[in-house]
Image (cartoon, rainbow, N blue to C red):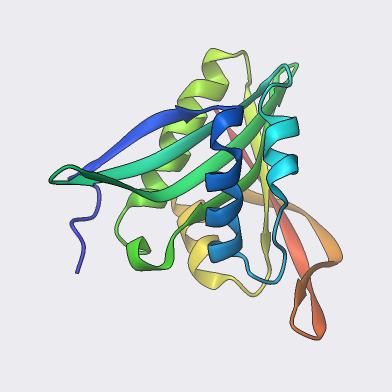
Length: 158
């Protein structure tokens, strides 16, 4: 099906990637899509950075996933992270988390935060394995069809 992390490489995202990032975010989170402008506006801001996970098969380079992060003072936040459906459970999210953590620490962050839908058990297991711990709850934060789902706020020391 896929080669997982063996053929994955990361590259920094730029505002020129805004449309591609929005398309990936839409594919990963169809209930809460972000507009291209959101990525285009965030990426040039001080402290913000993005990563795109890619695979190359012959001459074709294809995206696998992305992460968008922000560092302010000694804290980092993952604003959005997603792996395209065909690449899930292949280690791509672990690579994105690891690389985002290294970049955030290099920018002075001592801890990293993110939130995840309470009903997204696979992602919660991934984050727990990466050292994140629950530190809060945001009630009715995500829209899932006709209902709302809580978000669990997670933190990890870098």
